Structure formats: C-alpha cells, structure tokens
Length: 109
Image (cartoon, rainbow, N blue to C red; front, side, top):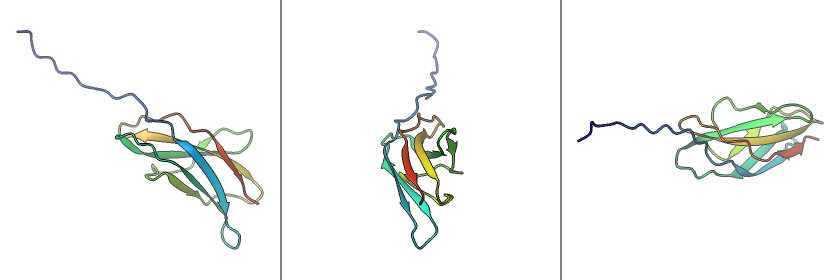
C-alpha cells in the first residue's frame, strides 16, 4: 500500500455575478434615498453582497460597511441633483468576490 495522502480543497472560485439590478429613487416629503434590488444569487456558499456606487467619470466605491445579507439595499447618503450608478457583487464564505453586476442608474431630483 502507498502512504496515506491528505487533500485539502481550496475554494478560489467566486460566486455567480448578481443580475437584474434596479435602482429606484424615493423621497418626496422625506429624506431622499435610492432603493436597490436584484435577483438573489443561489450559490450554496454565498455569504452576502457588496454594493458599489459611482458618479459619471469616477471609479466605483464600495458603500456598505458589512456584507449585505439580502438582495436589497437602501442608499440614504444621496444628494439632490446627482446621478448615481450602482453595481453589486456576491461574496462567498471564503471571501471570494464575483465580478460586479451590470450597472443601474438613478437621478436624485
């Protein structure tokens, strides 16, 4: 018999890229915000999502402090008269992050 060998699987594969991202402005009569929703990623080892925001001509910046656990996010730090572009990535339990989704844009009146 040959000597015993131990094999450790090291997951380096990112989860599926989120899809169906939509951005909707709300706020007349209250503090302005933009709600984001997207199709849930069904990978069994999904840990959450990162949300990115940018304005025309600038690079995307992650705006969530902790992983978002549901396929929805409310951005309350928006400014009147600005147009924002959002994208979302999925992160698995090992920290592998997918590419960002297609962008969705919304303007705050």
